[in-house]
Length: 113
Length: 116
Image 1 (cartoon, rainbow over the protein chains, first blue to last red):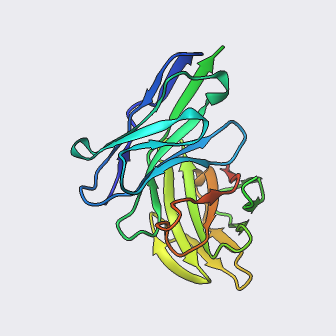
Image 2: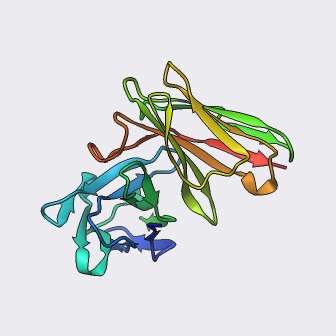
């Protein structure tokens, strides 16, 4: 079965620091990849997605992610975080049947001002 | 607001009991997905319905069942509850049967179940 690993459980940064959250997936074939974010008290929402094409994907709020097929990775980055980026971040891969998303366990990001 | 509505927001019950969680998808969305979020397991896919029919099953226990009604709302039934069933249960919807076309699931705010 496909799986997603997020290496960092909790990341603490100061404002303006750079962010990189790791994500690795298990399936070696064609994959569709996603990052979702859950701000405190809110529902999960899509940050960005990768289906094909340019492996560097840009999302909302200045986030980007790079798909590296050889490393089975889809790391999320942001050059300069803000206090409002405090949230839980989930990496996900679409299952092989294209019927559901398989999520990682999430990374909690805390940004201090 | 994602447009997906879940009720109740919070539910406290005892072991052995049965509860029903309800989800109304975004207007026009045909697919409903149920996920369970717990501290140790993260977000686990339970089951998907598309236009009233079960489409995909994930890690759903036999004590749990779901259905999608003609008006497209869905219910997740949890029975013979155990302490370990305490979790946040999310519903999500999408326009089509899979996630391929848009890649976007729209999530509700979840129903927090506490089993005592």
